[in-house]
Image 1 (tube, rainbow, N blue to C red):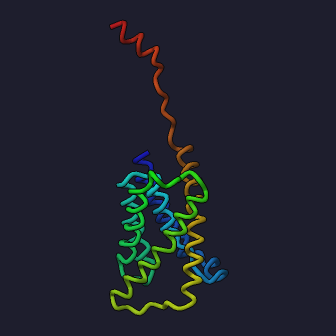
Image 2: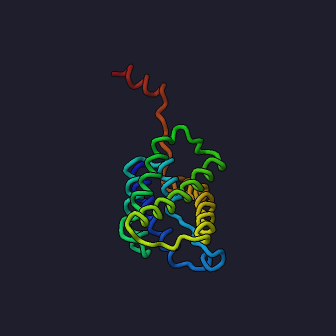
Image 3: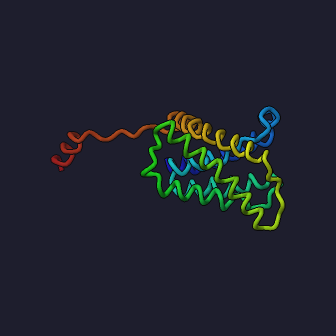
Length: 181
């Protein structure tokens, strides 16, 4: 499962960022873009090992910044902070319930843009942060919260399709083999 997540998580990050940047109807319909990367980082922090989490954070952040007008590496620190906090505390997060997955994804979907906005202000940039930003933040938060359970279902179905279950050996057969020696 380690190699599976290490390969599929960055590929899903690239695909989701591509779809996010190409498909324009959600942005024109609701006036805000749904951020897919914080939800994927939440999934990776809850389910994958640390190298797979780092791969999706680093590659996803660089790909996201390359496709946006933000400075390169701007989303790396917020995604790393969210991923590290969730990965460290994943034992106390009830990750198998829809409500818990939604709430963790919604919080991540709100914290990442706020941290990016804070970084832009720190860098001396003047981003557009008015009342409309509150609507965009709400849409990104709810969208990210809804995407986390979708990622869990997607990866569960991918794991069922590509990973074969291991069968434990019969303990009686092991005892018979040991007594014959």
